[in-house]
Image (cartoon, rainbow, N blue to C red; front, side, top):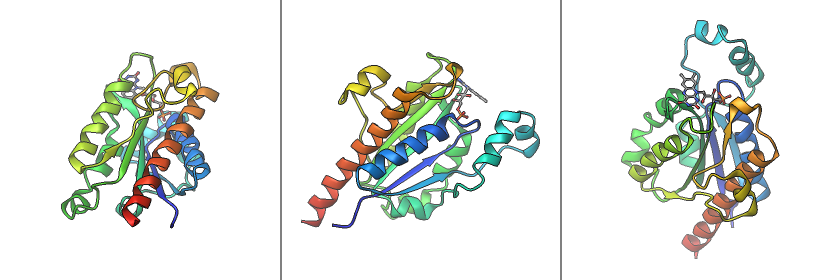
Amino acid sequence: MEPVHAAIIYYSATGTVHALAQAAAEGAEQAGADVRLRKVAESAPPEAVDARPEWARHVRDTAGVAEAGLADLDWADVVLFGTPTRFGNVAAQLKAFVDATGPLWLRGALADKVYSAFTASNTAHGGQEATLLALGNVFHHWGGIIVPPGYTDPVQLRSGNPYGASHVAGDGPPGEVALRAAAYQAGRAVRTAAALKAGRAA
Ligand SMILES: Cc1cc2nc3c(=O)[nH]c(=O)nc-3n(C[C@H](O)[C@H](O)[C@H](O)COP(=O)(O)O)c2cc1C
């Protein structure tokens, strides 16, 4: 059977969600998927980016990461979205990408794929779950198959977020547990997509 196609589509201003996305890409690869790691386009004005050195640095550091397009969504059997929390919600940059998917939605191309999401916030109670659940609204509209990590692996008991991998950026960059949780989540989503793909091919 053709390998599962996994797209990891994320937005990150200062690198936290990017690190989780990389870990998710590795987890998906280890689970046997063909992986596309894609950032969404930056829509903030250059003066806003340049006003924060860590933001400008991250934009420079990830210049080589390909930008997500609708073709990546169309190609994927499983999609993991990553976004920082913005006032308890999805970052506008990722939302802009999502809001451009109308043509795919209209022809049913977003339905029946596996979806999962991960996030970061500055504080522990800053809205990680609200952000992940907000992305879940989109997956419902698309007719997606939502595969959350739950508490299905020991790493989940340590990371503590059954809705999706997450990290408190105020504590520093993601450490071993958060990265392992992102990799685990992606692997679980890929394994679910593989079972569906095999079943549909049978
Ligand atoms: C406009 C804005 C809104 C934010 N809102 C929240 C929030 O509601 N809760 C929170 O804990 N952190 C909030 N943050 C902090 C970001 O979530 C945090 O910097 C981000 O998760 C880091 O991810 P990144 O390094 O991938 O950009 C906000 C940051 C910005 C710029």
